[in-house]
Image (tube, rainbow over the protein chains, first blue to last red):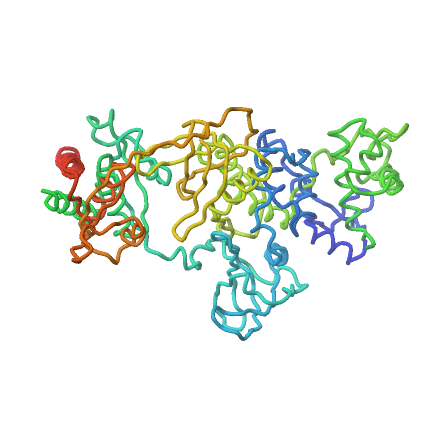
Length: 276
Length: 311
């Protein structure tokens, strides 16, 4: 087999080993693809799960990653049903973004990319060379987090500000991504200090809080179990947490943090006095 | 573009498990499925006929037949299962599952399936891309707008899950969408609500989900509903607040000559002004009517008692 063909197969995800496999001709090397690496563990997925996998891959229909997704769907044996429950989402604009094809390919191959980038509020373009480490979609925009090879630092790039074709280095496996890498550590929208709140919430109420709750459980005090749940959630600021607690003051009792609880009590007293 | 040997090899590897799962498939269907010509497919099948495991005796060869235009695999050797996802496919799948989970309401039966699948994919496929290198937070309003526009274009109805923050209620409603209203503050769906049997507006920020449903032939009463409003007199303590800015157009000064910061406001839902007043202690005081003023005091008293007794 030609080296080029072996490289092509490896690039397509087929892991080829070179070793002797013929008991009669031990000196003669052969090629082997290990079944455990090659085979899709399809028996581990239920029919419903295979349907959801197909539906998920179907989101790439009409995008630059259509061919990648189609090949995977074909092997799952569950064709994407255009009338499936997720059809309404199939036109997600964000998945059609052109740069996503190149960036995901580079990320999958761990290949360096080069592009022209326009910083916010600046007219001039800069050439940036990065090792992509992660991708984040945030409210309709894509961000690539990567190691900037010139600045020797990790930087975040909004893909809509990439003003050129993305050149992908042909060298694969140029770098490694640390196993504990978390794209949220670098995206500014996640850098806000969230407030952890614990509260009692009346059963059957406080739906907005329940929707974003981290946990909802029985309160420790057994006498409250019939009417209340204990809920843990996060708020974007102490100010917002206070507003939420007062808005739902008929059904929500803040337990922690103490400062928030004290502010709620003080505000309720103030409103009462204002109207007394 | 000419196909290289690697791509053809991949197709051969995919053909065997596919035919195994679809015994008796016609050559034409198989060619269509793999997007190749009939002749190319027959070349592939002829090549597979000569492939097998080391030893290469008839017992180790892949045993398949494609006579009479019908294909069957009798012995796939070790090609029973389909080819695993490669890194690019797994990455596309991970992004898509993250996107799908973001768009699926938590109470949808598929939500938990998607959640567990994401974990399963992470466990099943050896990947050099760590689990938290991919992140997806959807623009939920954009998704809702797209769904509503599609419903209007295709003359379909919507099943919406709506969280009314004033009433603190979560309801599922069937609505006929009429239009979308985009303002400086928020986007609103104007619709006929079949559940309430009247025209209703729904703020998108409070809409948890929207799903297209077939439009049933049913009567839509076009009478103008009369909304009862109560005029509430408010003392606005601060005017540089969002509360004041949002209501500016509807607030009528009680005395146009003096700037005493007292305004009249028509209110549809008493509960809204009670919650708004309590949640903004430095911003607004209800002056009239007395019943509203008493309701604010009572709500605060009850809340303070709750804190004292159970907190």
